[in-house]
Image (cartoon, rainbow over all chains, first blue to last red; front, side, top):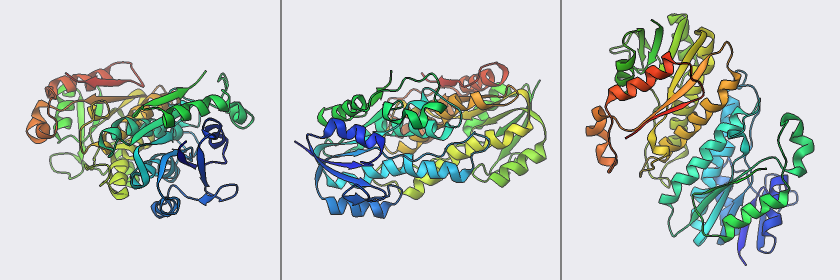
Length: 202
Length: 202
């Protein structure tokens, strides 16, 4: 039984993570505060610090938040790139950097990427590129983590639960059930792996 | 015989690129303007636009610039991350985006990453992470390029010519001669490949 901070608990990916972790004590956070115990904006260092300070010592952090802007490469502005980078890339890194002081020895961070870096589709270049960045971040940062803290990334394809929203832009993709992605999060939190990317695809 | 814009022509990597491309017409640019025909700051969209406007139509762009900040993960500030991202990641993407209007049909962009995303060393997490980002960018953006424009990335290990500077922080690495890296740039410019990462390691 672990105490886990789940950031992005109310989104479809958050619910998927929760499906694999519900036998633990889960502390929930999201951006709006609606349906979650804490409010956090992962693009804001002070907001992250306040969250960890309020939550106190925990065994694991699971993040399912990584906001991306979508558009064709020629039309994507620097501002759209920065918005994506600030959330999916710098935001997730700051969860690890700031959260390190609050996670017990041997505890873990589990971050989120996405299948589009391996299976490109139109309009998703920022999603794909920042996914690759956060995966390599996890692979490299583990050698710097104190107290056997672990860092992993779950790379899911589209969820069955999200197919109505994303299916039209992802022809030929096979959705997976959220419970399968939940198992990937469970494996990261309860296992001993570190610096791994767990791809959940069909 | 192609007309090639070489950005970062006076650095050690620029000289390596030049060694494989000197039988072409080379237009040189760097940040200081010392030893090069044009001045450019790749982190500034207006500077890039001015450069391409002044140079006119070309067959290829080769970039060897990607400024990185170095530090331990816990000590790296958001500002250091942004400085690295603005040059090695957004800067290189903008070379492709803005330069697309100035490169002839079938022409190419060759960008730079680095071996540290595959062979992590202390203090280089920002270098490693942005290298992975630009490699995945190249792999994904090729499907969006107009007029058969090509995009590739050269991923070199440390150069023999730079060993005195970087060797101490890279124990156990084998440096390669700049001329070998020059051949990788030549293969990208003169070949038909696109969306490829050419790793030059020993």
